[in-house]
Amino acid sequence: MDITFKNFQSKAQGVDVHPESTAQPWTYSLTGLVSESGKFNKIVESGLPKGNLTAEDREQAIESAWKILWFLSSACSSAGISLEEVAERGMIGLDQIGDDFLPK
Image (cartoon, rainbow, N blue to C red; front, side, top):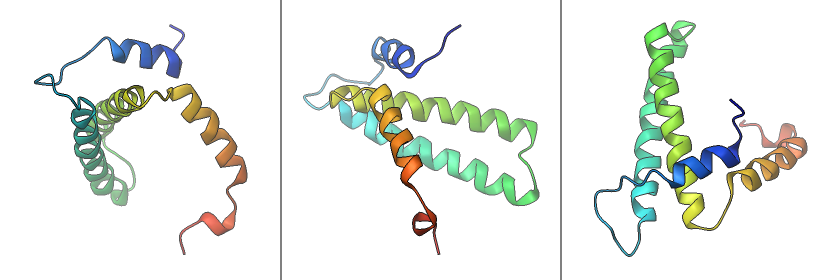
């Protein structure tokens, strides 16, 4: 299967599960993005200091990560932004990051 951000975003647009239709449907995506990011953080933060994630923690982290990508995709779609554009901008940004960007 050829997986691209474009394919993922297209599929994600067809999966609309927010509980009610609202004038601001992106609020569900943004809330989900924050919530799922917190779950991912908790999994990784508790597992990595021990050396590596356990197999179970790794699976939970992957489950959480794809949901983060889904919520991000939905929020970007609502704003008229493609994940491809985000990834392209990120590639440029990564090329420009130097030591000044690293936390001190």
